[in-house]
Length: 425
Image (cartoon, rainbow, N blue to C red; front, top):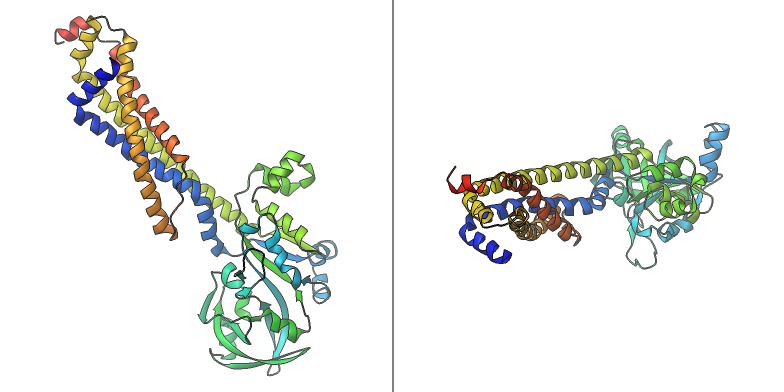
């Protein structure tokens, strides 16, 4: 009987029912698209924010700890006495969160002589292949972790005697791209080709940058590295990560396991310290904290827009159902006069609303997946993943807002007196 009443109602008022479905459909489309974006935007935004640079710094333990105990002046005396071993660098991609390591670049500082002038140099990887298990074509270096570097000309090849010059240094010495520079160091000399000018906005603007192997050879420091900058995908900090940051020993066994198995910047730094002997690893908090704040604010904005869409849809449904009640007043009065209970009449309205919510929610999920795909393509160049958990959530929300929109008109039904309605008042 209930099904026949619903079917007859849809036949007589199909335009109004279609309008209700469209209202819910639009809301469900927006909600499903925003949910899909919110679920996948963390990784996408984290990748985009890698343009800020590396967020983890690896140094020799003595250089990190002794200056704090004995003063900054000891850093200079330690410059050639302690270093990281280049042969351990592949261990960076052997930790639990190896897939979150976007790239890394070792750095070696020193001074070389050009035409009697001592110039600061930085040996590093630009796009160096590294032997990593299960990743036969893995390359890493400054090109991947420092996308904000602006290079006029070409990037050096790590296996060739090529270099970059900071724009400030090149301008002072009147260098141009293509010049041949002979650099001399404690362990010999070598001719290099200047292939590009670098503008980074940092100290690199006053340095010469050359492949790490050539810097080690000229400085007489084979297999040595002063520090390693690592770019890793991380999740924003919360109370657990801040607790671990303050005192790791205060974590319980369960908290430690959860912290270790979550991609916090502090847990990744901890694993890297275990992977590289004699190292001290610390997050670069200026970068790591800003990434977390940006992602959290974007997700909060998406949540607010979703809530507004749900409220707007609920108000639209309430308006439609109220006008529907006025049009069907005589029908409701007749059902009351024939002995229909109030809950039976309310059930009819709620069933109609739930059906509108179900149809609008399902259609909205289909349209929302397409919107999420377009958002991903336009903003990130890759489609966003549409998680299937979005479908039941959106359908349930669609039915809830349809039922909530029907609640006020259903209350009005109780105030209708059959004799007045049938009399036309």
